[in-house]
Length: 444
Image (cartoon, rainbow, N blue to C red; front, side, top):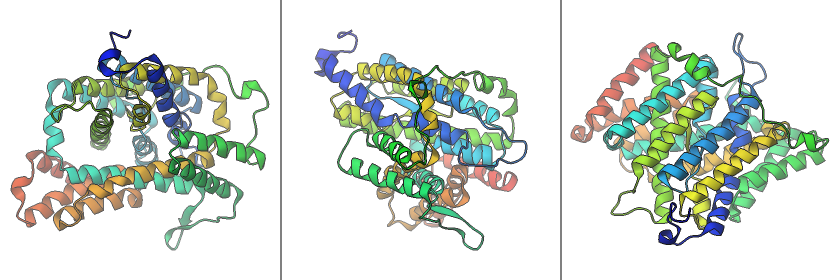
């Protein structure tokens, strides 16, 4: 085992890797409860007629299994201390934009995730991924990441009751004296304090503290016994295989945009996470990441597996940096993280304790972290600032990640051409320009 993971070469040991794997798990364990809340649209009391919800228990199991399997592939095949799970932002796009906004059944949306994962595998194996990465301007990549952060935070603020609908101004400040809203605000404060103090796993711990506070004040029903904490693994039957069964439903122009968005966001989110974590661990050699192809394959394979199980796109998590900070340097840390996700399968009864008010702070804080991408946009260049700003602002205002991406990709070639920088635009960007023009012409 030591030889397989190259412990001596990397200067690590079992104890360090175990602590690193546990640290990473605690840093991202919140997804076990946040993902089912988002994908089942738990905060939406009344769904449109004819629309059905995903089964919360099945999504919980799919989330844990997708994270465990994806992280295990990353650890054993790519041998990196990087964990995977259903991605924040992509789950919001799946639930709020595709299912709720476009009215696409969740079964068909899962088929879209499956296809995007298969395309990702082909792009990785063929090497085309390098061409695509280089074709998309860095400023637009940053804008997409920041925009998704604002969108997630907006959803969190809604779930908390801090922001509410208003017939005159579209949105306004909610009633901050409402007990559930106060609980969410308490959770935000606790989360901020823990993260400001550098507590690893601060988001997860804040959810626990907020849940306990909710029980104390009578807003959340406390567990009545051990069976309300630990229980049998929820059945996957309601979601398992639905992606495959509905593949014949993806051949529409609307689903083409959905698949492209899944692919685009996962593609660059993964690349960014890999580079960030690998740089922190000192893996980058001559500006290249060793075994990058294996790492990207692990990510795309996890998306395929996760979609079949019944969850949105599975991707590499930036929270892996917490494990690297604890000393993790080998794939064994990922194996440990995967083991904890498998163990978490038996704690599904806690879904009743983790309410939308408890998960709202996690959404808001993750949004804050993703918005950090704004600092990398070249705002002093007007031809860049316009498409970047429109990408960022359109996502929360249109309640659609796809619309934000589309607007940015339409305006970028226009502003660059008008500025006399047409030669800097890759041909792929012109192709995407036409795709998104058709998107607005026929799908809106």
